[in-house]
Length: 248
Image (cartoon, rainbow, N blue to C red):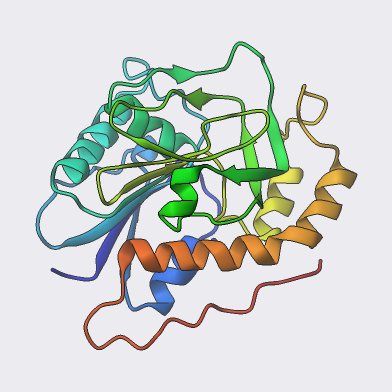
């Protein structure tokens, strides 16, 4: 097996997120593609070490309108079948749930999560060591997923009960965005799609206060999770996470 990890992205944000930071520091070779911009999705073969499917603006069930989603879903199916380490984030988690036959879409409540919201681990999440205490995590979404058959629910929030799940041994979906740094979220705050004023969304002042209080803990947790998912390889030294910004 090589060190290549396929990264599927749905936008043009710079690669300054925690996924890329972890993979580079750990000696992996992240290969980034944007199928929404026409990049082909490869076939799975034994040279891949894992995959991360990021969030984005697309409704995962609109395969007819966005044919590239079929190719992404084919890749996800192959990763699940061959038990390749796979993490889906926000839209990526919804795609995994959709591939596994679960319903995906906006909730009847019409609520948004945009800001930093407290996650509560389930009993299974605690027992598995996924999340052992409440954690504030970055959110930016108004769709959700039903829990796929055979999956284990790992964390919930007050507004969205399905926040994280595991399917099989090495497939994870998270509705939240632990990969996003303070710098990354600042870009989101300035984006045209920022959901200020929508029901459930936090104000800019609330976000600023919560990010400064909780981002460091979120980063530390996420680096630990990535290490458990992708695993130390033979000869690796113990992973030391990079410093996490505590102010901006």
